[in-house]
Length: 96
Image 1 (cartoon, helix red, strand yellow):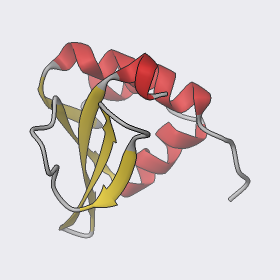
Image 2 (spheres, one colour):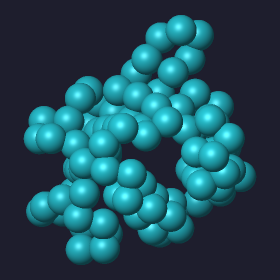
Image 3 (cartoon, rainbow, N blue to C red):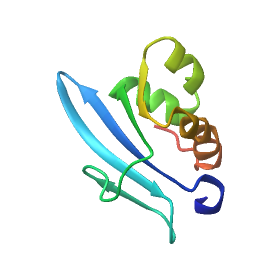
């Protein structure tokens, strides 16, 4: 996945007025996901409500529709956000 994406995404996930920050580093090595702000500069920062994040990852909400509908806010290189479809398409599906 690192070879396909080559980017760092910072996710600011909101719930009940609080924000949790997670980083998906798919720029080098084997990739890494960790809680907290990006250790290296993120290519883009995405802000989304927790419920919508779960729908995005689960394939129930299209990232472009979420962005156009104001449910997903993007700061930084908006073109990197197009790689989210690769990220979510290759993610293993689980039943919640």
